[in-house]
Length: 242
Image 1 (cartoon, rainbow, N blue to C red):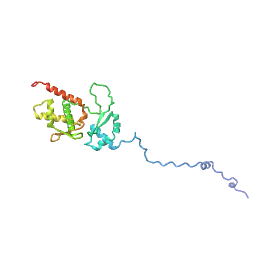
Image 2 (cartoon, rainbow, N blue to C red; image 1 turned 90 degrees about the vertical axis):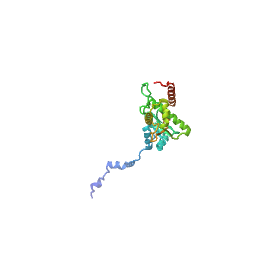
Image 3 (cartoon, rainbow, N blue to C red; image 1 turned 120 degrees about the vertical axis):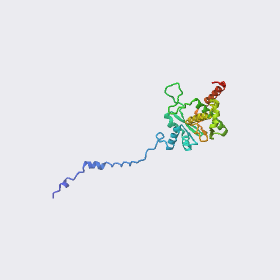
Image 4 (cartoon, rainbow, N blue to C red; image 1 turned 120 degrees about the horizontal axis):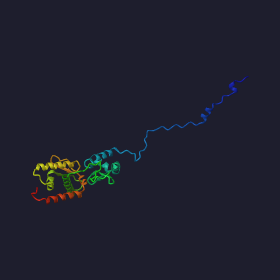
């Protein structure tokens, strides 16, 4: 009996099938996850609360604990980080814990470009250009503030009145002969200083708050020297001279 062709010549497995059966199946790729990498200290985002505190600090250049205690706490609890945020601007934060005050100052190692022979101020800090009368009133207010602190202790709000300041200002500037004019002059000076964060707005009773920033605004030696010079000039003026 004759055999069929399939029996005489059995089918040989395809060479590609042999390779496929000999090669192990590849492992399944791991399922990707949406978990972000752990942030490093260098790339960690600044917390929202601290960002708001720094923004408030830069808005006026100062932050008082009595006015905004939560933001003040953010600054005082992370001064090193705040300094790092301000470092590209050549600024730093200073904290007066006793008076509940944080304020911006120019970094000590800052070097400006060029030398114009004028008093240089950091370009991002408002220039504190005061007139002679404004400087005089600043010195009077600072002296008043420190005297009240010695009497009542640090952190106690210091208030004064327009009527209390008028005779002190007249000692150095002289009387104009018009009470209305002298009062208007003083109110204008106080409004100018209010923009520097050293006094509050004068209320309806002509009462105002002397703010803690006045201690740090000007050099006390320069202010005392100014008062002494004006006192000597007033004493040396002959009576009845024009």
